[in-house]
Length: 95
Image 1: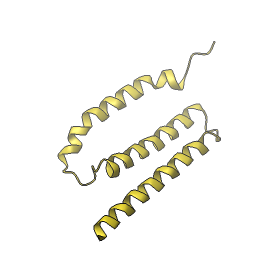
Image 2: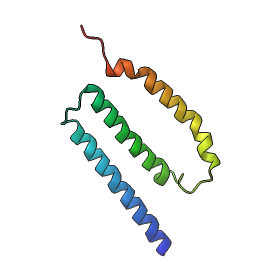
Image 3: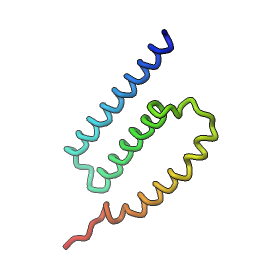
């Protein structure tokens, strides 16, 4: 029973962290760090939330190390596409 309780506590803490980072994202929308600054901080918060979901809700925390090498290719592809599109998102054309 204590193992179940430990898992429930982990899920609750992870959920609380996700709620906190979501509130932080909403709060960020009211702060002006510059256009690029807001995008970078928002992307960092989103990456943190995605990491929490992958590690705890998708149970990747207890997996063997080789699973992370398999996950590197899609993550690298996401990074390349994100940085390739960043000039369009970060610096839209001004009329």
